[in-house]
Image (cartoon, rainbow, N blue to C red):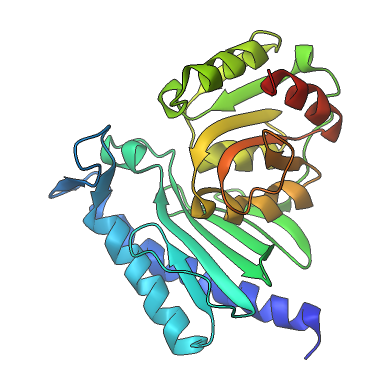
Length: 265
């Protein structure tokens, strides 16, 4: 089996993981029994039964089908053991949106091959939308059908729309000041969205996403989606986002260097 055929097979499997996890999440949305706080006394870090159920079903299916693959997830951890393939899973990216009944959350499923992102998927079980990137390109499927995605041209920050999930995610005054400096020169800024922001960037709806404090499973599944659509995504100092951290994604690569200069302070 050649590399492309192997990745096609794994992409089909990722769609299965999305279907299985969606079935475990849907009964809980807008019908929560309890919310736990993982913060240990700091800013709230919520988790629900839906988060854990969705990640468990993904882990169980990977163990059944690909027992030699690693899995790293938000709820049950994990580590890279040197396996060729490693799945990164955030079962509900946007748990705060989830617990407030807002549909701006999604399940993230990504695949690293030798520590490099090769497949990415965001699934929204409530709206019936799915974004993914694989060997054949980057695609969206929703109530109106399926289509290929592409970022839009926007070579000037003054014409750009920038988004971030929340100002609360900038834990330091420095990060908040740098985001404010960036958003002060763009056409419009919006808050909210979690993983949706990156997918809407890939779909040509917005131009820049700037966020801080991300874990690897928050962002690695979105890297193939952004890049296959024509965008660029790095840390604020221009490095790969494989380990998370502060992330900048631009739909038009012409924006990226300009935005990086501002975020560098």
